[in-house]
Length: 68
Image 1 (cartoon, rainbow, N blue to C red):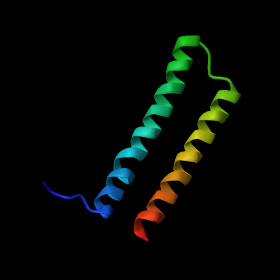
Image 2: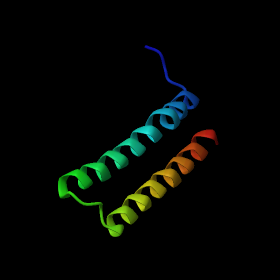
Image 3: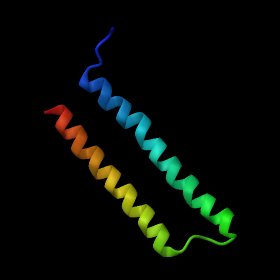
């Protein structure tokens, strides 16, 4: 069994998780738009932006802790 190094794990998080989070956010907002037949309210868009900011900060903290 091959042990995964922390740098490889960090690369997986950086190259796989970021696009997935962005795609899920975009797909969720598009789904709301199609389901309700109108654009999402500014409050929902604001929550999506805060969620993305949270994940960016979490990823930065994770990357910093892996490199230490």
